[in-house]
Length: 238
Image (cartoon, rainbow, N blue to C red):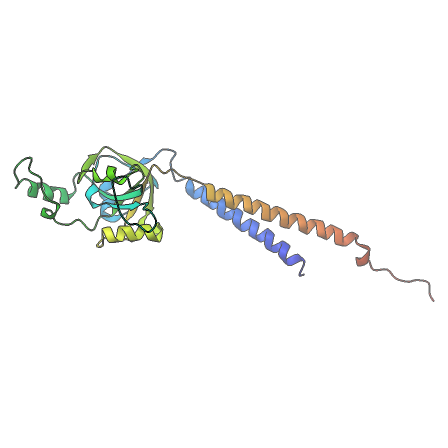
């Protein structure tokens, strides 16, 4: 029994991994081959979306409310225009968002062309939709971004914000402390559906099952033909 148990375990493990891989492939079929247009107004209200491979049409990017991850030199936290940027997070809202109308009303109180300080606007700290982008390579590029801008579209993979690595989620929670993170989502710009993990599980499943079943049959056949396992009787009558 001790010799059989490991082989049975390998066979069961192979079946389980294969089943999980197939389940992942089937679930992934819900992702289209092209990004699916999502309703930003709805997601900005409740965080629910219909497809992970998504795109948003016309929207407003709040670049001034960004969180930036940079590569600084060891033992130095000095930031300069050439500091390499790993990625940035910034919130996006639909063009008809009520906060924009509020900001436009405030801006109308100032003379045309006169710079308006950020402190003049009420803080925006409860957004539900963020974009993670790597399109900016140096901090100097990020510094030149406007406070906000209308963007034609952006696409990538949508994930719940709570699935981000701990360090990245901390960046966002510090940026928008009043956000309901159980509903917040992040669009990883440029990302596409990938089944590499399912392929790994499928490969391991095939290896485990094949090795377990093969060794089981091999040793079973070997044990049957082994003379030490054959029982003989002495019929000499001595």
